[in-house]
View (cartoon, rainbow, N blue to C red):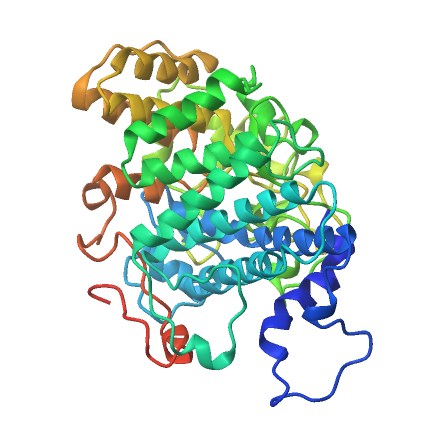
Length: 489
């Protein structure tokens, strides 16, 4: 879906900052200026594909969501290998951090591409335009949701491009204002999208409802969350996949549990020079076992290594433990010739465990460099998440029977006994189940913050500071010092 529009997508992102005549009066060959674009349905479709393209960077959200929590350590070749992840791991990150800057830049780039479409939404009429605009607004909501959950309130730019001078004048909006925009965009998307996307990987009504429910949950708007998420459960055609293991192989993707996936391809090569330019999922290769030589798996970079605390959190009879967390030495010892299997330990830390959901396997290798070209889709929202968010919402609105029903559906899928808790224990049981169900998926840090348990579970976590991340200082400087820094950074 992404590759055929790569160069147009890059051009769309550059348009907002290269259209001022006083800075540039030479028109590059084959360039199309903004005012002469959007003359046909295909123009809008190409621009929309460019807006989807920035979802590529979600692997970084997965890493930080695990590494900032008690689920994983940064790992890698050394403590200087992606140093920003090690700083986040140790909770000593500050406003100079490349990974946090990429989160900000990539999501604002996605917003810019969405705004470019919305600025010209009325230029040309054609059948199907409402769906394109609805998908555009879903994407803009997604990118703003990423920003607000990392940084709190951020500058809110809607339906327009910004010139260089205007960037220095716009201030940070409140988190409430950002969430209001997210809700508005998603409500529009819900009203104009069908339940089943016509193109694999595109947003549909279920995806928009799921993201809106998540936005409500993060704001503790539990009544609205319950109503929204219940629509997916009662109106949508979703169900839990019978075998939990089937979820984590490329051959089984886009199944009944898929509410919204980010699509990846193994059919195009990539470069370490531009992670946002890739077509494959970079997470799998980076999660791979360093210089591994043996069956099933392939060598990688040993990033985002699960902790023993996570592994031991599972009941020994819970199949999700070993399907989510690879205990490498135990796996090797079960092989016919364990002495022939070798691997190296990175100096960035070693736990003996690897992310078994997003990992490089021999049957799923992409084109060289295959560290960067995994075909594994990233599961942004799956039906289990809908059920557990809905359980949380109902538990917080005194509807405990429904909360228990949803919670126990998730447990029953993996053969775990039903729970019958209530009150504060029920809410804790739901968060505990989220840790087991979504281990390795990038949700843990934000769940700990939302539950108020981060200070108890994350080493060096400082309340009043670490709930959100610092605004990258270079971006504050580029904005003319007009953006305030987050507290205590």
